[in-house]
Amino acid sequence: MAPRVIMLCTGTPAPDMAHWGSSFIVGIGGEWLMFDCGHGANYKLHKAGFQSTQIDRMFFTHHHSDHDADYPSFLLTRF
Image (cartoon, rainbow, N blue to C red; front, side, top):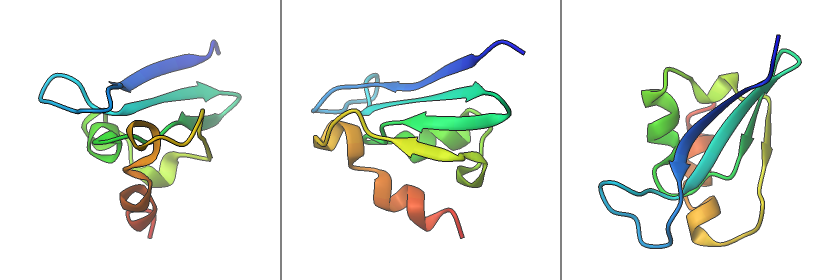
């Protein structure tokens, strides 16, 4: 199966209704990888039909709020 890339949020340091923090997921080799977890990422993940428990690995491209602000919320939904 070919890798699948889903853009959840396409990033901005100042989110608005059209632009949220950076986040995307990649399905490859039977795993789901999440890259960045910016503003609204957890909401967008659920809106795309995924649960946070389906994410096998998390990666951060760098640590700015638009790339990691929603990480605490993501962690809380994994229980």
